[in-house]
Image 1 (cartoon, rainbow, N blue to C red):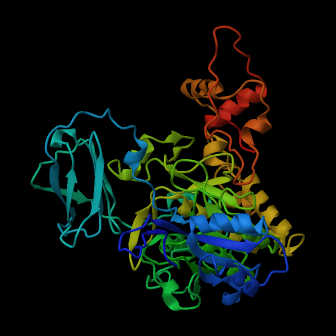
Image 2: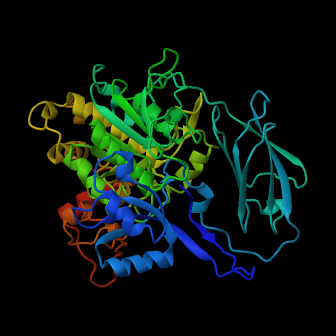
Amino acid sequence: MAANQDDARPTSSGTRSKPVRNTQYMIAPAGPGVSAQTLAEQLNQFGNILWTHDQRGVSGPPIAIVRMPDEAAAALRRSTAGSLIIESDSHLRAASFARPVSSFIPAATTMNALGPDLKVTIRVLSEAGAPVERACVQLVGEQASVQGRTDRDGNVDLTLPDEVPETISAIFVSARSGHWGLWQQHPNIEADAVNTVTLKPLRLPDRPHWGSEAMRFDQIPDHCRGADVRIALIDSGVATSHKQLAGIQRGVDARNGEDRSWSKDATGHGTHCAGIIHAAAQADHCIRGYAPDSELHVYKLPMDARCSDLIAALDDCLQTGIDVACIGVGCERGSALVEQHIAMAKQQGISIIAAAGNSGQGVLFPACSPHVMAVGAVGRKGSFPEDSPQAAQAAVAIATAGGLFVPPFSCRGSELDLCAPGVAVIACQSPEGYSVCDGTSLAAAHVAALAALILADHGDFKSNFIAKDAHRVERLFQILKDTAQPIGHPWQTGAGLPDAARALGVWTDQRPLAMPLDAGLREMRSAIRQLDRIPFGASQAMMFEPPRGPANVTRLPLNPAPLAFQAAGAGTATVHELRAAMALAGLAEGP
């Protein structure tokens, strides 16, 4: 499908008329009984029909994808008087590529122009002296920042207007694979010269990843591998050329139908998530998928993915009998037509788990849907080098408990359900290799894998909830949230970090995120200070279980306003309020 564009059409005299903006729309009948052919005939005079769902042979009501001028769409709305649902076909963006850390750091006061443009060359090398190709390099100045990718010689030329070397506050380097990234504050940069930086090699771990320990995947029985559960990964495709992902055999191009394009992944985004779910174990390192016996179905979205592509993928999930769908993309604007298909999927027992997003703002759609489990990201200090971009994220992050923190990119709000590892995750990279990855899509993949293990081995889904319906979905989500380890504030972490051992009934008294019982005076003072963040007299349920709602309702503030003690009329904390403060400080007793 073509992207949105402005068409300036010449008049008969040869002059150019006012540009006509053509937008891509999704259009469907608001009621039953309208065929795809009737819908197409009704829309032909308004714009260019790209395709309809009935032509694709998929389920659900007919939906036409149409490119038309915005004025024509307005006229269509007036003429049909509500008999059609007419929505902009919004673009989706991936949720594993976090925004640059510098975008979350308050900018310095803008200075007057300092002089000519600053032109520098950055050369990125490995410890062995080999050039690192396709590394992303970002320079941050006092007035602006600039970034680019290295060429085959490891070089990238960057220009910052009105800066001098002394005003460069930071440099960030992220390698595509094989290396840790680099973060240097106030680097020694020379103008009109080649500035060389060296990256540390990424050594694959010989013990379970920090995320495995935090979610206690390492404490569940070996036979819990997700057998007979069908997982849909709706993302950018998967590189089956990777030795640990070669066993993935099922996939489809969501826009173009059946072909093998799904087995290639130009961006690497879907490959990261597929490895977390399904990577085959290797003898020489501890990177493996958490649900390797599940049946993974890949639904490849194009690089210019839209909501209509997500609908096509969900329709195929309905036909294929998918159990869990992991969605790694999202957009700010909700969609009634996508929401309709999400509701249909839930009614057929498909549990949809989606990335909350990486903008640091409100939870993206479809994660914010009340029928979807929204997952944010957390990281753990000590799981990355001190000069890595992840260390910069930790420096400006919201601390929780047990060394965990909420990275600044992770979206937050009342719709957030859970958090999971999404910082410094060592994952499979396309077409072969490994990289250090950040993003809420990685967090969603962790939760999707655990969901598969629960469906495969939890007793409830062999008895009372064996039928694939909405009750099955609700029970799965309830188990995931009820057994999660509460950390931080629900606006940033939802119900907390999932606990695989507790969710699967492998009960132990170990609470890896809890503070010791003999917490010192400093920790107790930290708990008391949290009282300033809690409105005295408010019910604990209101504070810690904010209401969910549809995407188009007004959201509650992302961060509850602090309530400072006043000189006159300062309240007295109740037992519940003190416990709430202790929970925020990581001192509360686990459920």
